[in-house]
Amino acid sequence: MSKKKIVLLVSSLVLIILASIGGVYYLSDNNKKDVKKEPKPFGQEALKINGTFVSSDIFISERNIFYEKHKRNPEMMRKGDEERNDMLLDQIIEKIVLDDYAFKKSGITITEEEIDEYILRFVDTRYENPAEKNQFMASQGYQDEEEMKKGIKEYIIKHQLFYNAAVKYSISIDQQEFEEKYNEHKMQNKKVDYRHIFISADDIGKEKAFEKANGIYEGLLKGENFENMAKNLSENEETSENGGLVTGAVFAKTHPEINRHVFSAEVHQLLGPIEISRGYEIVYIEKVVEYFRTKEEYKEMLIVNEFLNSEEYKEWIEELKKEYEIEITDPELKAYRLYREENYQEAAIIYEELYKDFDNEYYIVRAMDCYTLAENWPELVRVSEEALKKGPENVMNYLNCALGYYNANDEKKALELLKKAEKMAKDNLYWQTMVEETYERLGLTEHMKN
Image 1 (cartoon, one colour):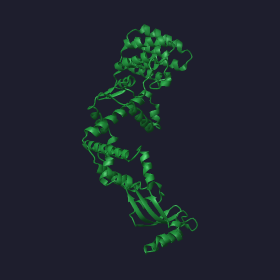
Image 2 (cartoon, one colour; image 1 turned 135 degrees about the vertical axis):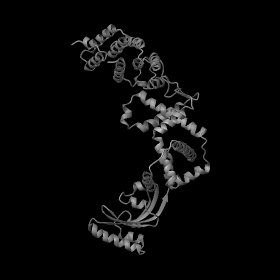
Image 3 (cartoon, one colour; image 1 turned 90 degrees about the vertical axis):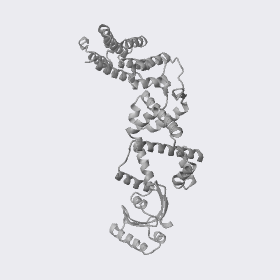
Image 4 (tube, one colour; image 1 turned 45 degrees about the vertical axis):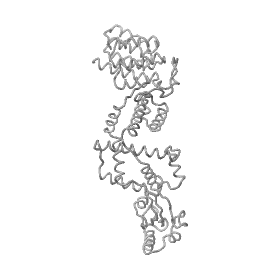
């Protein structure tokens, strides 16, 4: 087996052991022991962008957003604290860079009149009732009208920024798919007042129910009063008394057997008889309030959405970041970022410093892992020996030290350490397996006890 393969295999073993000794120490104060330094509040002096520290308030706010987004994602829960915090760090950097570029450098502007027009079309029209509007504002985190205006302004500017970038990268959507989605969008973004007459088939059967409903429908076509006929003939107990009137109906809350008929109809249109599971419905559309986008606007929205979920977006945002000086100043975050970027030697040095500061076994294990991946065998030996002094009962420390000596061409010392690990493993099946696998990976199985 090649030395490179040995490095990678034993590195994987180290990561497995991290979990077994509690690799969730990272930013988890309750798990730290014998701490020499007091940990900083989350996000304090952790990141600089263009020479200015990012506020810890932003870290906490974005962490809450990150948690809400991923709290039901099993894959995310299986990740370690370091990996999750690294993903959060990317989210924070992206937000700050995007905000600064969009609002200060992009040159995109919006007038108060445009904001007011947006509110009129998509907020006031949709939420005519003041209570509904207040509920909408609260759901978006807006305290008052001014905050809502600010939020809408930011949304429109960012939307334009993303659309411009999407056009630059030639992002497009299928026309047939667009037409289908636009029809759905129109139906789902309107309110309808309608009257209906329900004829039940429960007692008379579908055939007779249809004959009755069709007779009513033909009478309405000839000019009969819908409200009066609903009061006298509709078998819907909830609405018959008020002439079959339903007000402020929206797509999602309308009976699924008639909603597509209702929300694709025009005002003053008479529909029927519409077959449903329990009989037939005759419907008259009294009022339609529309707050859907134009075709051009909706196509832009779909293109932006396509762009934000594409590889082109990742490329674009990385190019944008190059215009900013980004410095990770928190040692824990920096060490993992260096590890992720395969700068193992530098990461190992920081993990060692963290170990000295916090006396936390997790960090020295991470340092050993990094020196292994860096193939820096003298440093792996040195750190492993230090770990052995601190934790002589930890079998993994012997295995790491053995790896360092073996790759530093001291097979005798490596065997000595493996023998000690083998003895310590005793009746522990898990550790026995780890010791056996290390013997095999180093090609020293002939030295194992039978």
